[in-house]
Length: 158
Length: 215
Ligand code: FES
Ligand code: FES
Image (cartoon, rainbow over all chains, first blue to last red; front, side, top):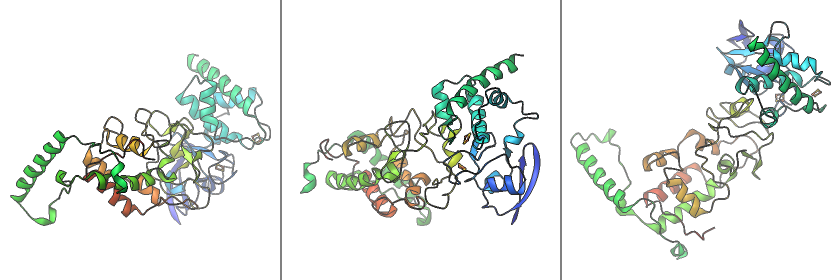
């Protein structure tokens, strides 16, 4: 066990953990944040995506030691009131079916919209192809990303 | 002789070779002024050892390694890396991106960690996992030995590497990762030591390209 210092959702945090522990375990079991989901455990589904210094890493294969001294943002830390443009678009269009994949979907979409505020369908495919949804909500995900892009523009103009 | 059929295409020009010999000679004279053999770096690259047959023979060994999945999978003809011993397109279709490090939420290092992830079907790792960048794709997939040899020594296509950098490149950490590929993946067809030997022989004997018809 080692003391690992990191910042989770804007809070400096010290976790006692085996440095080899997956970041997903640390987030869910040690920090108690259960919004991030476990799907495959081998970087193939995207359910576990969180931001590590702004990048959409898969926390099931990322060791907690890689997050030492870095900023981790989970679905719980994306906004104060679930009012991030991507969250709002997801609500407006009722995107989730069972919902299991959607914290990962949203965290990936946020990185896309940061780097490409006005994405084409092709950009969306390129960014989201690693987020698998067993309920098949892909078309709503695409629609919601376009809506979030509009909401983001309105927010930054208003 | 099996290799006599190869056309001898010297890839380092005679003029450069002469210049290099002069430089090596001057370097040797300068070094001999304070010779403490411990720190002496010897350049074994002597142009008088040029031998097209040996060079081409060594390249054919190099070629079997570069075309193995461990090397070729990250030197694809398209913009999606390859995966597995059958070199199929990488699941999820991650794209190269301008810098070779992926795009948006699909950057290589989001899944490929600094070290191999334990277990079957998990991402292999390296601190600098990436494809060649979009403006220097260094494609291996589909190249004949002739084409690949020419590309490897063409500075406009090899990442601007000169002979010395090419020799060093055999020890690059991402090249070495081919011999530590993670569970369930086959190794290249020879040891890294034998690869380096073939690589060095190919270059030091003149970096000749096999004839265009060689497969
Ligand atoms: S649980 Fe991490 S990618 Fe599936
Ligand atoms: S909504 Fe059920 S898995 Fe995506």
